[in-house]
Length: 285
Image 1: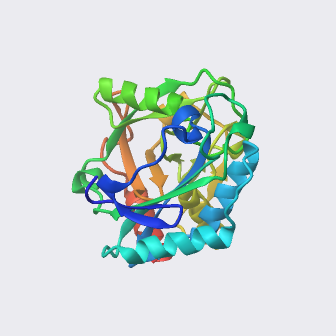
Image 2: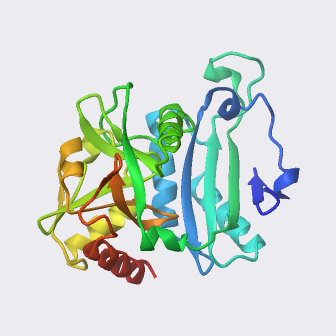
C-alpha cells in the first residue's frame, strides 16, 4: 500500500493516507466502473481508448459521469507524473458517488468519485515465459452476452480465481452458460491450432480488452505471423489446441502450458506464442 500514489477527486495522496467514505456506492454495492492500464516510459498505453471504454461501461450501467473525458485524462497524467516510475500500473475507478443514506436508489448519491491508483509495475516473472502458467475452467452461473462492462462487481471472477488457487492453478478460464469459453478472470483468452490464432468473440460475453484490440489491429495490418479468427470456442477446443495464451494490458502476453493439469501441446511455452509476444512489444513500444 505504501508504494501507491492515489488521486481522489483531484487530490493526490500516498497510499496509506487515501480514504473514501464508507457510504460510497462503489464500496456499498460495487456500483462503479473502472479501467486498468499501464505506462511505458511514463506514457499511458492507449489511454484515450481506456477512457472511452470507461464511458461505455458507465453507459451500460446507466451511470452518468460527472467528470468529462478531458478531466479524467488530465488527472491520470497528473497522477502519473507525480510519481517517479517510468513503467507503472494505472487504475481508474469511477463510482456513482457517495450516498446520503443506505439504500439502492441512485438518487441517494451525490457527484461521482474519481479514484486513480498508480504504482511501479515490475517486469513479468521470468517463469511465466520459461514455464508458462496453468489454468482451470470455471462455469459461470450468470447469463451474459455481448461486450461486457468493466464494473466493480467482480464476484464470479473472484470465485473463479479462488477456485483456481485452490487447485494450484494460476487462474481460470470462464465458461458461459452456453458452454463457450469466454476469458480469464482478468484477461482475454487465445488458442493456436494448425497455424491459426483464435479468440472468443465479444458476443459470447467477453471484455473488449485493449491488448486484444491491439492484436486484432496487428492482424489487420499483417503485423503478426498468423491469421486471426474470432470464433466461439468450447473447452475441447482449448484442451486440444497446439498453443494457448492470455493477454492483458499489464501482463502483455502470457503463455498457458497446462489446462486442468494436462499439457497444452508440448507442455512448454509455444514458439508462435513467444514470437507473438516479441512482435506485440515491438508494436506497442
